[in-house]
Each structure stands twice: as C-alpha cells, then as structure tokens.
Length: 226
Image 1 (tube, rainbow, N blue to C red):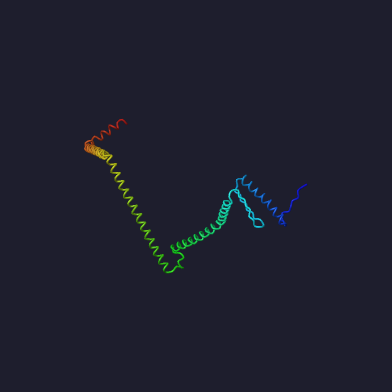
Image 2 (cartoon, helix red, strand yellow):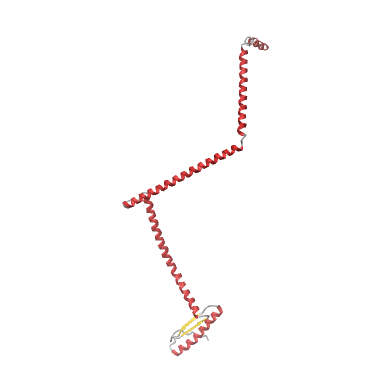
C-alpha cells in the first residue's frame, strides 16, 4: 500500500511542533555534515526556533564561513554595480570628447576665415595675432629648411671636388699620353698638308711644259681605236 503524502503546513499543536522541529533539525544537521565530509565543502547552518532559540552547525568554523560569505556578497554587489558605473563614466567621456571635437572644428573654421560673424572685435584681434605668429613660424621653418638644403648641396659639391682630385691623383699619366697623341696627330696632319702642297706645286709647274705634248698623247691614245 502506497504511503500517503502529507501536506506541508504549519503544525498547530505547540508540543507536536516542538517534537517535529527537534527531529528535523537533527536530520538537517546530519545532512549538512555529510555534505561537508563527502564533498569537502564549507557548510554553515543556522536555525532559529519559533521561540527564538539558536541552533547552528559548521563543517569547519562558523566565523570563517560567515566571513567568506560576507566577502563574496560584497564582491557580488560590486560586480553588479560596476557595469552601470562604467557606462556612466563612458557616457561622460563621450560627451566631453564631442564637446572638444566641436570646439576644435569651430576653431579650424575660424582659422580658415569662416563663420566669423559671431566673434567679437577682441576675439578677431587675438585670432589675427595668432595667425601672424603662426605665419612667422612657418616662414622661419621654411628658411631653415632652405638653408639646410643649401648646406647639404655645398657639402655634396665639396665631396665631389675631393673625389675628382683623388681620381686625378690616382691617374697621373693619362693627361700626358693624351697630349702626346694630340701632338702626333698634328704632326701627321702637317706632313700631309705639306705633301699635298708639294704635289699641287709640281702639277702646276709641269702643266705648262706638258701642254704642247697633250695633242701627241691624245693621238697616241686614239690610235688603237682606229
């Protein structure tokens, strides 16, 4: 026959309630002890009776378990509050960065000469001074870069001149050989010119003497064709 399931409700009789409390308390403490031993867990159990009497059980030390519980509860509370706090901080940073970006954009437009209608005379004068100061810095930086480039080119020219002198010192015979070759060429040209002039002189000098014999030579050459 199946055991009838009793309804869980408050026991009206005080004596019966006290007896049930004592039995169930011992069973509850026994289960807590078994849990601590079998599972190597820190177990603490606190029970107050209807009359206010305290009954407790701890697998190790009640104070240690309570301290551990308190620390865990505090850390859990901080972890739950941290996302909301971080979100507020990030939102504040976002707003601050937006304001800085808007100010920087407006200042840039002012520097470009845009949206100047809302500025006072003092602000315009201050902006003029800032622009003049910036222009002077730009010109100074440009002059420095020009001077640096000129110095680099001069240094490079000096290095090239030194390298050219070093190469000349390493090849001292090359210019002499070149000059000798040029002189020899001039002598050959002079001799050729003299020879040509001699031939022309001889031709002109003999042309008058051979003029009378020209007809005979022509006849002699013409005879074989007859």
